[in-house]
Amino acid sequence: MNNTHAPLTPPVWYRQGWPWLLIALPASAVIGSIITLLIALQHPVSLVADDYYREGLAINQQKHRLQHAADLGLRALLRADRHRLALSLEAREPISERSLTLHFIHATRAELDHSVTLRRDGDNIYRAQTAGSPPGYWYLRLEDSRRSWQLRARLRIDGLFQAYLSPAED
Image 1 (tube, one colour):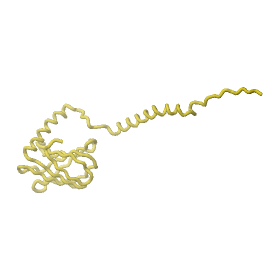
Image 2: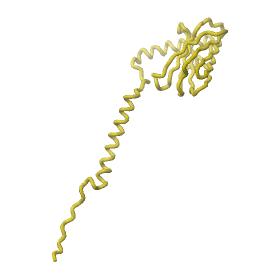
Image 3: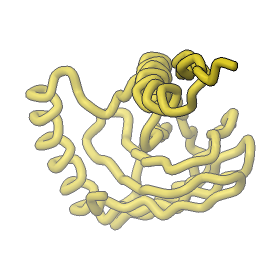
Image 4: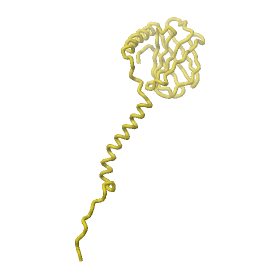
């Protein structure tokens, strides 16, 4: 009888666990990178201004508008439900504006930004119909038709809301 045994051959590599572990780590990084790239391409970040110099100059103009609103003693209270806005404007002297513009600026998504024209409805009361704003954090900018003053507010909108607008900077 022959006691010689044939040498054991190791199993092929794809039947072992450790090569798959070594392959899985870089493969998961590649897949994660592709998913991140697709998300970035579908939802671009709009927080960086293309023309930063012009934006910087506009900041100085906005400061003058805020200061002018403070000099006039302007304040406003905005109340809203799903489809109506009512704004009560207070000032040291009567305001003769027939309409005001209220800008809704989303904190992170520029495509949601929109403006509403509020029409005078009585003494310093302005009203408008609106389609509403999606829930989230918003910056509000109220200004007159000549853009000589501006009031601001920051709030979270989630259905009904009330906001106090003032010339104080955010």
